[in-house]
Picture 1: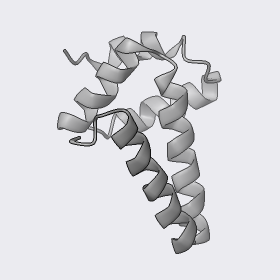
Picture 2: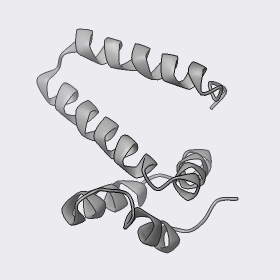
Picture 3: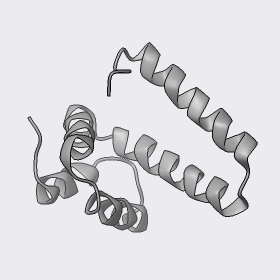
Length: 92
């Protein structure tokens, strides 16, 4: 069952992210809603270390977009699809 943003803030404290990374990640989560927010919150409740994985993925995408590197972007998306298939959550 999904939780609210203030509860996620408490969970993220145990994620391994620095304080500034936590703040940036929470700022990002404020813009996520619906099913995407539910998926992220469920993952974080299960294991706070997911915050680090989600955050690092976000930062990597941000850098790729800045560089406008379509080849690297496609490769990253291909890797994400493979990870989702392996985790058997590709229907998300």
